[in-house]
Every structure is written in C-alpha cells, then in structure tokens.
Image 1 (cartoon, rainbow, N blue to C red):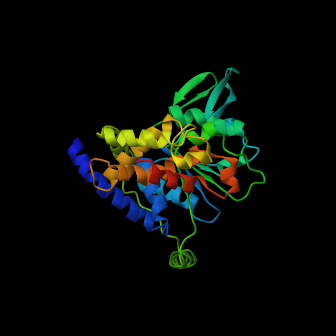
Image 2: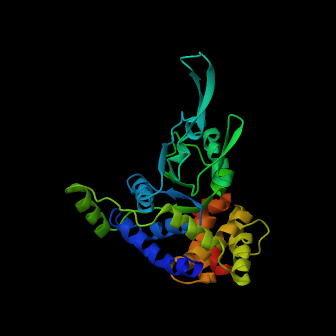
Image 3: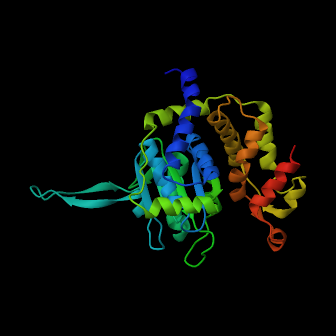
Amino acid sequence: MDDVELLESLAPAHDALVDAIGKVVVGQRAVVELMLTALFSDGHCLFIGVPGLAKTLLVRTVAETLGVDFGRIQFTPDLMPADITGTDVLEEDRETGARSLRFVQGPVFTNLLLADEINRTPPKTQAALLQAMQERAITASGHTMRLDRPFLVFATQNPIEQEGTYPLPEAQQDRFMFSVNVGYPSVSEEEEIVRRTTVGELPAAEPVLSKERLLAYQHLIRSMPISSDVVSYAVRLSGATRPGSQAPAAKWIRWGAGPRASQYLAIGARTWAVLHGREVPTLDDVKKVAPAVLSHRIVLSFEAEAAGLTPQGVVEQLLTEVR
C-alpha cells in the first residue's frame, strides 16, 4: 500500500477504532479522541480522574482493538525499579554445576504499558520509566536493550487522594505528550453503564487494526507536511507560558513549558487533522490539542492558586490572547 492509499485509509481506521471502543466503554468521546491522537502520534498519555471512571478499561480496550501486546503495572509504594525493567537471576546448570546470570525481562517489555496509579510509587521507581519513554530502550545489567515498537505508556493518576502518593517530577510529566482529565459520565451515559455491566456478560473488543498498520500510520503522520504558520503558532503558544512573556495570562504562571511542548503541539495538530480527514493542519487543530499538551507543563504562581485558577483555565485564557 502506497502513502496515498495509506492516508486515505487513516480516517476510516480512526472511525472504526472509535466504534470498537464505544462497544465496551460508554461515553468519554473527548478522552477517546485525545487518546487516539496520542496513539497515532507515538506519544505517551497521562489520564487523571477519580476511581471508577473506566480509565483502566479504556486503555485495555484500546490494546485489544489494536492487537498489540499489553502490560500492566500496579504502582505501589514498595515497587522497585527492577519490578519495572527486569532483573538478573542466578541459574545453575544441573549437569556441570556452572552458574550464570540470566536477565528476566520486566513488564516494560511490551507494546502498550498501563502504569496504573503512577503517583503511588516514589520518584526513584517512577524514574525507571524515563529512559523507556524517551529512548524506547532499557539499560540494565550494563546492557542497553531496545524495546519493540510501538512502545507507549498510558498512565493513570488519582487527583483527589494525596495520602500515600508522590507528585510526579517535572521531568516525568514532560515525557507525557498529553495529560487528559477524565470526567464523570452524564446521567444517560451512567444509566447505559449500569445496564451494560449488571446484565449478562460484558462486551469484548475485537481487533480492528494490526500492529504493523499502526506503525505504518505513525510513520506516515510524522512525514506529513506542516505549514510554517502552524509551527510558528505552536512555538509562540509555548513561549507564552514562560517567564517574561507579554501575554496577560502569563502573570499567573511561575514556570512554563519547554521546547518539547512545541514539538507535541505540532505533531498533535498534524495527527488531529489527518484523523479527521484533512491532510493539512490548521491553527484550530493546534488549539484542539493545546490544553492536553500544556496543562501539565506549567506551574501556577501562588497568586493563581489563591485565586482558584487551574492550569487548564490559564491555558484556555492563553488561547484567546496568543494570535
């Protein structure tokens, strides 16, 4: 299949994924759209929401619809880095008595990794994911091992329970392309959830996209053209969050987004456009992904927190100020 045919099949593939996910997960359409945008952009995603909102179910369902290897780590305070990356075990040959070390791969060796309640483990253990998320590789026992592509980390975080949790370091947060807030379902959606989950067997997702096709789509999107206006807008939007910015909303920000935010704004806008049937992204596509890209990359000032402002609200204000 050439690039033209691949591009023409991308929007229908996106629609098929949305339909397959919708058979298992009720509602959360905005969350699904951002998740798929991160997925096709080859970017990691952080989901923030209270327990019971189907965050884990959503990630597992996406893995099933893609037919990729799925791994899950339940983050706890006693989790160690070796529990993520793997460890050496001592083996003895029964015939010769010779002993040797063999590396046993950890759950990070997968395609789609669910890091459940990632903020429940100390920063030392959280940092075990940094190299994997940035370089798609793991260094253990003095050797660097490449991870199979695709490799994506979808993490969940509970925003309300602070006891026994550890805030994600800024370096860790910056590795996530998107931070997505998962809200409560509507009344009609919750009624449908109750009907589906209390009668008979739960519906199962069916694969609609292969691993090879996903990799081809990711490569295609990265090679798509993007206008200088979109790049300039993405850079100016990120720059508006930094100290010294002339944007009025910048007064509420103590620390802003780095260059990685500009990169993710550009690739996110490109992916959002092609997933919805448009070859060339516009400034509106940048605005669609901007809250998810920027909200976890800015630190509000004490005045902003005292005024009850949120990072999402400040980003929305910036979108009206940066032309």
